[in-house]
Amino acid sequence: MGKQVGETTSGTHRRNFLKASASTLAATSAIGRISTAWGADETDSSNPMKGRIYKAVKWGMINVEGSVLDKFKVQKELGYDGMELISPSDLDPKEVRAASDATGMPVHGLVDEKHWQIRLSSPDPATREEGREILMQALRDCSAFGGNAVLLVPGRVDAGKGETHDDVWKRSIPEIRRVLPLCSRLGVRVLIENVWNGFCETAEQMRDYVDEIGSPWVGVYFDIGNVRKFSPSEDWIRTLGSRIVKLDVKDWSKANGFSSEIGEGDVNWPAVRQALTEIGYSGWATAEVGGGGRERLQAISQRMDRVFQLS
Image (cartoon, rainbow, N blue to C red):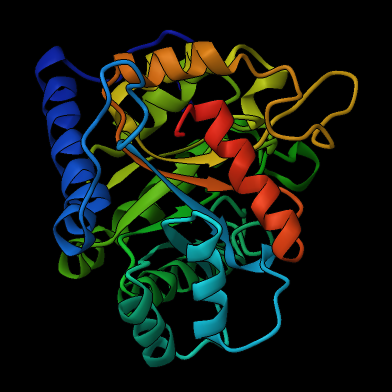
């Protein structure tokens, strides 16, 4: 059964263990390799996000002509630190790795692109099995590209198709647990994203869902803009705490929805920065907005700099 708001899932000792394990893995996988590979800036006490946030874009946002290497070079010139790809993909891991090595820009992770259509919450066991196999392939792809986490939407609430909130909860968790040995072997995590799928629409539900899975190989990919419809983003950050491993960056407003540019919606960015500082967040922040050519990508980079006060 899915847990209701505020309901606990385990004893204090277990939750503390998961928090500690998640914090250790997050620090190691999201930051450690980057710092040693190409140097991280020292944090600025007057600007706590500087040196702790690494900017990236989704690969599909890049509308720039040229090779994979050309696209990596452009992104580096525009102030980005890395990339996020998708799975499945027709990109050649060797070509991507070479571009990453040449520019010092890692691929930090992948998005499981089929999680909406082939869901781990499906009432059909065969569909759930297919979804699990797709997730496992995404984990392998992520490892091949040099990434450390796969973004996953675990299901969708659709009572008319036999997918209630409790159904999504109880069906998806066993499927995710089945991929954990592969996560451990590859060193790649599964990160659950908060989206408008009718599932875990409070921070407490998301917290309890991740804790019930009960593995340091599973964390939260927190989308700052997606939750603003339901409650302040900063409240989610404090509730989820060290479970947050990566950030998707967008804005949202009652007036314009997701058409709001980063920094122009209803997200309280100073409060978000404060909450991220309080939980000790350090890691990737990936834009998920309409992309375009060089000028558009530069504008996105500059907006991210402003809302996180990176420059």
